[in-house]
Length: 141
Image (cartoon, rainbow, N blue to C red; front, side, top):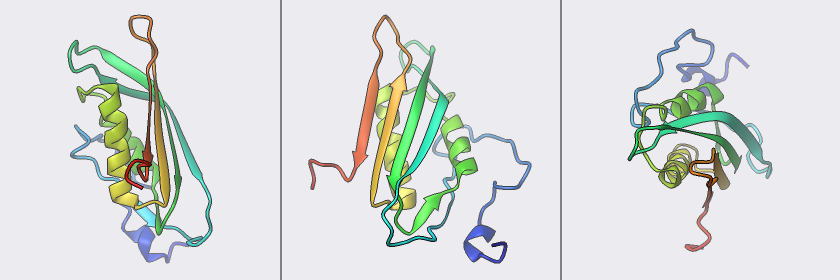
């Protein structure tokens, strides 16, 4: 597998770099070729320690993110995904916007057949918020 050209372009995997991007705009989602193009299968990525900031209070928000997708021509490299998600730690944004932003960024990078991003945020003020965004958007289909 080391001869695969698509793996030569990965800049984080297997490297000791631990500098996290300061924001999602600076993060780079890296991909590698799907070796089973034409087979419909789901990839599930469970991220139980996601964090961001409330844009009004500046207080930290935490969530469990679940990203599920049917890959097209490529798959996301998980170390780059980890760095991308960690870049939200100092990003003030509403929970709903975060989930939709993650979906948009992943769809742009991967061009999946289908994708669902679900954020189950920790309760605040006695209310637990869950946001789920899907691609393709069922309203535009």
